[in-house]
Length: 121
Image (cartoon, rainbow, N blue to C red; front, top):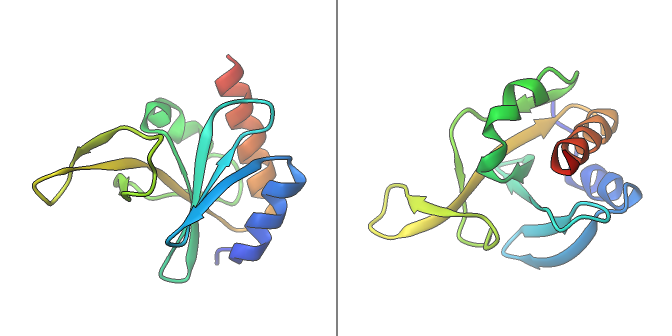
């Protein structure tokens, strides 16, 4: 079972991820001290963190973190404006990324810390 949206938001704030905006239930965050965007969105009742598709080569590693689960299709949303676009089902291109959900705040902390390490190289 995934954790609540409020838990994810408070954990991201504790990790010093900066909130940029919230539009139509999509919140953009930046990783601490980096200009790397991530998005928080609720699909149904499941809060998802979405990262850039460029990290796809690391997704199998990220899901080995206990409590981290991946959606195995790209996640599309027009509000994720810092992400690349592609055609999905419609005639125009839409922004997309990789979506993950979490069982605990600890899983989010491990996930974000590993993502920071990946971004820093």
